[in-house]
Amino acid sequence: MGWNSEKYFVKAQRYWERTTTAGRDAELFLLQMSFVVEFVVRGTLVSRHPSLNADLSEETLLFANGEKPNKPPTSIGMDKAIQRVQRLIPEISAAEVQAARLLFETRNEELHGDNDALASVSDASLKPQILSFIVKLTKFAGQNIDTLLGRADAQQAVATSQALAKNRKDRVSDLIRISKDRFFGLTKEEQEHMRKEAKLGFLSAVMKSGHHVIAKKCPSCSSDGLLGGSPIGTSAPILDDAEIFEEVRVIPEVFECKCCELKIRGLDELMAAKFDHEFVSRNTVDPMEHFGIDPMQYVDTDDIMREYEERYGYNDE
Image (cartoon, rainbow, N blue to C red):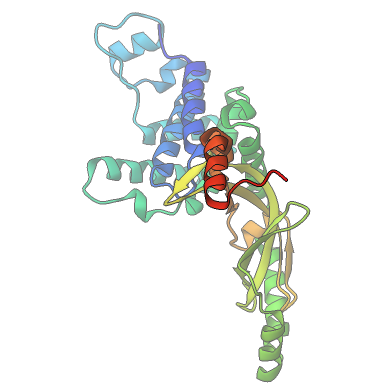
C-alpha cells in the first residue's frame, strides 16, 4: 500500500523512451517531457516519504502511510510538488524551478484551454534547465540517470547540468566584446572584405572525423561562423513525406568565426554565449535497409531471360 518511488521512475523511463525516439521538433515533445518530469518529481518525493506526495486529506495521508483508504488517494498539485523538491534539494536553481513551472503551466493551458500553448514554446528555451533539474532529482532519489534516460541522453543531461553550474557569462561577454571592438574598429572596406573572405558555402556538413558542423550567426560580428560538435545519439527513423531519416543529436563543442576571429570553446562557454545545448542534423536512411527488403525476392530471373530472348534473340555461339 502507498506510492512507490521505483514505479514512478520506471514510468518516467518509459515515457522518456517515447520522447527521445521522436524528433526534437515533434509537437508532442514537450508534452511527453512534462510527463517524464512529473513522474521524476513524484518519485523523488516518495523516495523520502510517500506522505510528501500526498494532499492533506486524511484518507490520502493514511494511504501514504501504508493504510487502505476508504476513498481514492489524491496527490498534491505540481506547483506544490516542485516547492517540496526545491526544499529537499537546495542545489536546484531558481532558473530550473522557473523552467519546470513554465512547462507545467503550458501543459495545463494546452490541455484545458483552446490555444495551442505548447506550439508557442520552444523546447530549446526550457530543455537545458529541465535536464539539469532531472539530473539533480535523480541523484537525490538514488536512481541511475543512465537507466532513466539511456546512456547517450544521460551523458548529455549531465554535461548540460555541469555547464549550467559554471558561471562563464562574464568571461564569454569579454571575449565577444573584445572581438567586436577589434572588428568594428576596422574601416568599412576592410569589414566588407573580411566578410566576403569568410563567407561560407554551406549550411551544414559532417567531417571525416564524424564531427558535425553547422553555420551559426556570430554573436560578435553577425557573420556566419561554424558551430561544431560530437554526435551524442539519434532518433528512431522518421518518415517525412517520401524520405526516411534519423535525427542526429549533437553536443556543441566549439564555435569559430573566420571573419572576426572569435573562438568559443566548451559547452559551458557556448551556452553562456546563448548557443543551444544541442543541435540536430539529418541522416537519410535507405528504405531497403530500414525495411530489410531484398530486391531479388521481387525479381523473376526467368521472366527477364525470356524477355531478353524475345527482344534480342538468343545466340549460342
